[in-house]
Amino acid sequence: MHIAGLDLAAKEDRCSGFAVIRVNKPKPKLIFLKCLSTDYEIIGNIIKYGISLVAIDAPITPKPIMREVDRVMIKSGFKVFPPSFSWMKRLSQRAYNLYLTLRDLGIKIIETHPKSALISSRVNNVGKLCNLLGISIEGYEEIINRSKDLRDALISALVAYCYVMNTCVKVVKARDGEIYLIRELVISANG
Image 1 (spheres, rainbow, N blue to C red):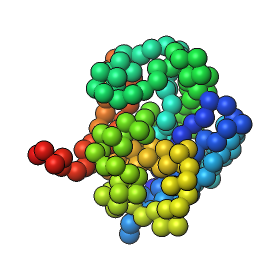
Image 2: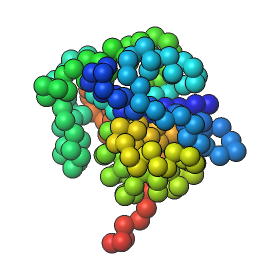
Image 3: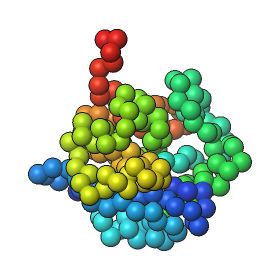
Image 4: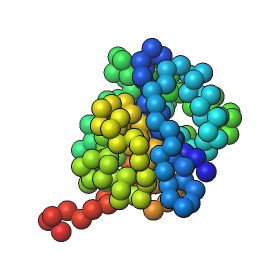
């Protein structure tokens, strides 16, 4: 089984980070990490790798308005930009169109927010997070540290991994949406 994380850019001429994790045994492993551009390229790679689940870092909503789920995230201390912000409108529209296409192909899509997922896990960097989850990133360590888009794509893929494993996922729910994060993985110094 393969799952993916997508740090979607608002425009097709910008880097949309894309990460693929092979979930199968003997050990989960990051097998692809790259900047993609067009929706065609994104969909093509999802099909090529036989992806069953994609966690997308973008608001998935038919209308780019402030949602209740965004308010819940903000009240919970997570800094998210609502879909109603000017540049977020374009991102929301692109994400929703991609969601419709992938859904029609039978691919499960969930919404995530990588920075909030890392914060909710209480782990301070993506390398440590991969290690705690038992996911090999061999060969990708350097590129992860150089590119925020790719790092966010990997965190999104880790959220997808937690979703399919059902052991480390945390969900923020409201009547108009769900945003998937990673539950706390380390005990804080205060208890």
